[in-house]
Amino acid sequence: MPELAVSSLAGVSIFLLGALSLPLPSGYSIGAVFLLITAGIGLFSLPRPATPVPLAVRLIVAAMVVYAGLWMVDAALRGEGLREFDRPSRFLFALICLLALARMRVSQAWLWSGLALGASATGGLAIWQKLVLSMDRATGTTQMVQFGNLSMLFGLLCAAGLFWARDRERFRAGWIALLALGSMLGVVASFLSGTRGAWIALAACIPVFWLAMRGVGIRKRTLAGLVAVFVTLTGAAYLLPQTGVSVRVGEALEDWQQYVDGDVVEGSVSKRFEMWRGAWHLFQEKSVIGWGETGYIQQLGALGEEGAVSRQAAGYTHAHNDLLNALAKKGLIGGLILYSLYILPLAWFASQFRHASPAQLGIAVAGLTLPVCYMAFGMSQVSFNHNSGVMVYALLLATLVGLSVGSSSNRAGERS
Image (cartoon, rainbow, N blue to C red; front, side, top):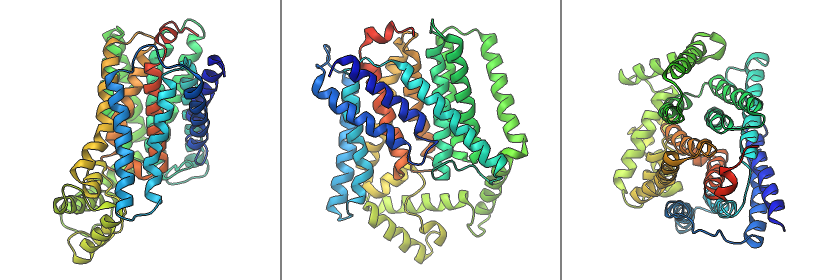
């Protein structure tokens, strides 16, 4: 198949990944399947890149393979069944997409338009659920916390796309308006979901965007104005009762105070502290290889029966903390491998960030935003225990890395 046709199919697949992941139930699977099929065609029909894949990208590839391999082999050795093969296998499928995209010339317009439309549709859905259907919290089409986290991610990725849009020569104003709308509505959807972990991600990404804006020479006065707008919008989100943000903040503070006072653990915050305490206890007992998925559930339940942790917290299947969950289930080795999926992409995109052309700055900022958000989400959630979390991370990581190492001549000169 001609290179142009394969690249166009890949572009459509990337568009569908962004546009359908959140508005439709399991929408992330649609773009993923199309992208995987296209990647398979590309690997067989397109020549290898003229220049070797950079070492940093090869390390990311290795991390994806090792993570999937360890999780699946560990599940097999512990007799945990095929279910535990499912989620880690997504990284192997994503790896195929990454390697194929590195051989293609795919316009970034597919990525940014898909993300913008997907975030906008998600924001509209959240507003409908909250204000028209009078739901306590917007849930979108997936699990509530996942919806809030991923909505925030998509909103921030749209904001990263603005660095690409400002360099366009054609339709510049239209691209900026589309991505700005997607950014705003993605963040609005997250606030309406009441997902507090997403607020941490928003704060964690501020330095990334600040450095990017300084890097493109935005004047201090403009930066100050943007900060003022950001503070105003977040303040409005807190003060407006319809958003439910102030209620969620109050609940968290009250729950924390009850936990400190030693009262009955009932709220989500205090339950998380109990789950973290239990996971840390289990990690200390088996610090090298951990307990595995089934063993963790059984042992945490036993801790609940003994009164070592609250019974409510002992009923959950994961620790609601990315690192502690990996440490308890896979040991220190598993924790290091998990975090390599975050740290290695950060290192790669940080190097790209320093030397990015105006056309490539958006990809670099998005590539930093993705792992930063997931590490922030991981403070109170285990994203990879959910299909939506692992699919979105694996496929977006493959897409962003693949685009960053694809044909530089095409991307550097792209103006459409």
